[in-house]
Length: 115
Ligand code: AMP
Image (cartoon, rainbow, N blue to C red):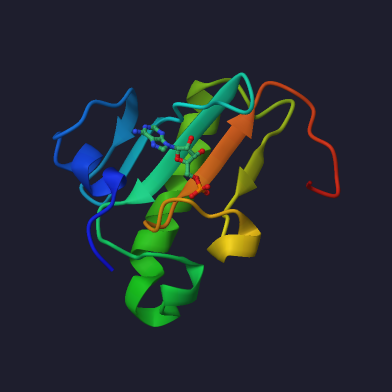
């Protein structure tokens, strides 16, 4: 799997509205927001999709993604009312960019089941 647009964002080759960064994780606002707050949280290493996750090998970066989500949720004032985290996987899951990412969305009420 080749480089995606998210790798270009990590390398600062294309711009993004970056809200959070550590050595292992980057987070930036989605260009087509589906909620008042819609932030993508990605690992800096290339893991294309959920199906490429190897639990033991990737344990630390997966923990970092969720630590980032909680930090950002606090900064964006989403903790009290709640928020939604989504990971799309594959064509039926609606995945467009093959670089693992959490969608962190909040600021409105979400319905269930997801569409
Ligand atoms: P997914 O469908 O789960 O793969 O999600 C990909 C997401 O990336 C979509 O919500 C897009 O709106 C978002 N996206 C694509 N290109 C960019 C970009 N250059 N900057 C920010 N978000 C992007």
